[in-house]
Image 1 (spheres, rainbow, N blue to C red):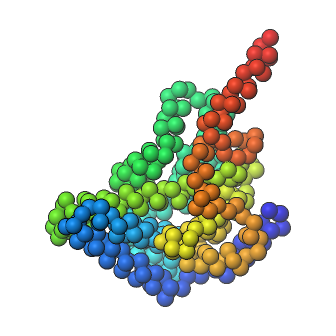
Image 2: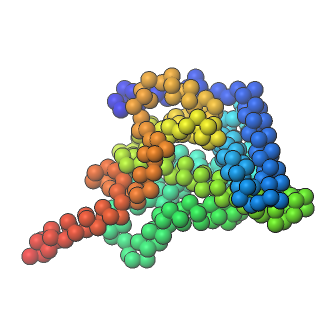
Length: 343
């Protein structure tokens, strides 16, 4: 992308940054309504079979993902014009998705400010090592990294660790307001879960909510992973790092089927979101379609996104992601060079 295009991009996106109250309210209705109905259908289906209950549970998980996108927009204060409205709605949606509003809002803001910056990794992102860092790392670190990057761990254990455990505790250095919001969210989660257990029984609650949670959690982590982990993504040292380039070249356009696009709240237009977090999710597609320089952003589909599962390390030399297999090849290739220099 040319320098001239990058300078004008944010100006071109600006008209889409205003939220529309009617659209926001309608999105809450068409998201929470189906979620509650599907949750109840999953519950009554348990009397027939758990496998039958999984059908509405899968769709409910999709709507829970959409609830998270509303929460996500609220943390950016892009869902409503009024900051207080964003905070109230965001905290409620945070209870449903198990995310404290202030804590996640802080981490996610850091992610936006540092995405693709090799010198500022570690907050609100997927743990990513470069090829050189991995090769120089001791065995314990390599093992931990391979364990973390295993798909079963990342998309299976990941939701349990992040949503159920990590989100329950305040980060180091959190201010009083953020701490209190985390405490409030935790209390409301316990109250909400207790009421549902009393209403439907704890076994039914765990079967229904547990299934929905695991499916939506895996979807959420997958979306975050694949939208920054594609072959020719963007990573640069701090001196060379550019916010606009990191947004449009380091965040993919995940072109999904319409139903999946709806359930994921248009977050597939991730390049637009990183370019301007103030664009509400229901205007992301419009912003993309009406901004000519975005026609050639990195695009992945449901089929091609599966390739991202093999990407493990960032190669600074070739400027793309590589697999652990590629590392074996690079290691073998480097051995003769090393021996030669010693001779």
